[in-house]
Amino acid sequence: MQTTGPSAIVTRSWPLVAVLAVTGACASFMFTLVVPIQAQLPELLNAPREATAWVVTITLLTSAVVTPISGRLGDLFGKRKIILALLLALIIGNILAAASTDLTLLLVGRALQGLMAGVIPLGIAVLRDHLPAERVGGAVALISGSFGFGAALGLPISATIAQTLDWHALFWTASVAGLALLILVALIVPKDTEFAAGSFDYIGAAGLSAGLSGVLVAVAQGNVWGWTSPATLLMGSGGIVLLIVWGIFELRLKNPVVDLRVAARPAVLMTNLASVALGFAFFSSQILFPQLLQLPTDTGIGLGQSLISIGLILAPAGLVQVAMAPVAARLNRNVGGRATMVVSVIIIAFAYALALLVSSEIWHILVANALIGAGIGIGYASMPLLIMGAVEPTETGAANGLNSLMRSLGTSSAAAVMGAILAASGAGHSAPTAAGFQLGYTIALGATVLAGALTLCIPRPRPEEAHFVSLPVDVPELNPDASQR
Image (cartoon, rainbow, N blue to C red; front, side, top):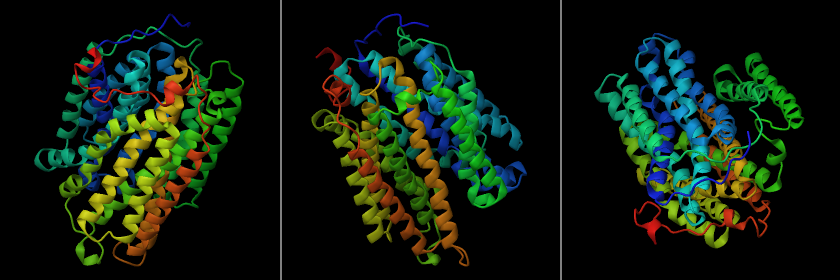
């Protein structure tokens, strides 16, 4: 398939940015959708707790696998077409989950819901294709922030639905949202006119899926199976071996599903490594803060909050992420993507330092979490621009998909590490101890510092690439009149 010509530039950017931002928020909402009923799933499904844990794990697994693959599919066959396909999978998955009465059907539905994560790198690539250059920076920042916004607001919304209606209503509600987005994307997102050359690498996609599945399952289930159990070691080592073999195979192909030569470019490589560390730092707070808020007050450290209260306390971080979109865009314009990443690292490091010093009141957690939201909103906005500054337009989808995968590896690792720390600190006690939370904050702070060090290793862009890394920005991208100025 050959490039057919330059992509059309839309004259009114705000509808396109708005629908892609809401689509990204819906994708992240799928991760918190079942949190309110997670503890009740063994009783609701008549299944052991170890088995119902897969209701969360399988969505994380399919989302991690789909991001680089959907990016390549979008480059080849059209990003709009693949976004519509992922939305259709979301609708089908929610209908299956809503109709489920046993674990098997629910897992199938949840696996399909996880595919929705692929729309975020695709949406970023669409923005590069169809927006004027001066609009891209702010729009990318908003799309990046929408992921945290959806996850943060999803918890109180899903908790309210679960506590007032039957738990199946969660999935019927998500089905309706998916259908509305399918219609909006079909009407508003322009058709692609520029495609990558070559064919889809089905063998490479299967190898990547199998290798990642092994590693991620080992990470996600390590606390349950035991980190030295045969199952964990077999899945983890088998996945690593498969990924090594897959990498050797991909390097021999002209059109691989993930071009490792592109991934090895210094700017792409260092940005992706920093993304792993920053994803770890971000998701550590998503494990530590909710547990601290939920623990009973008689533990001496818990704050005894209900699930809805926890959602409302943590929700401002999502709003802050979206609010940081124009700030991140201006920073990318004025100081460049690398310096913007450093700013995000400083903010997150300050938040964890604050948590280490004071975390005994609700407002302590609210402030620290909001600061992390601000830092992530800025950092996640700069990553796609750094990636796009180092790749060709026909490589954007796959390259951003790989970057999203790196963030997923960081978040998955954080969930496993923080879960293990809290479990170990609670051994012999009724609940995790203050020392466990302090160790968690310290490790998250270390990951943040590592992200900063890796960011400083990102090479400065060449002059001909600088317009993708430090894009000028007209802040009110969502103002209907902005495109007329």
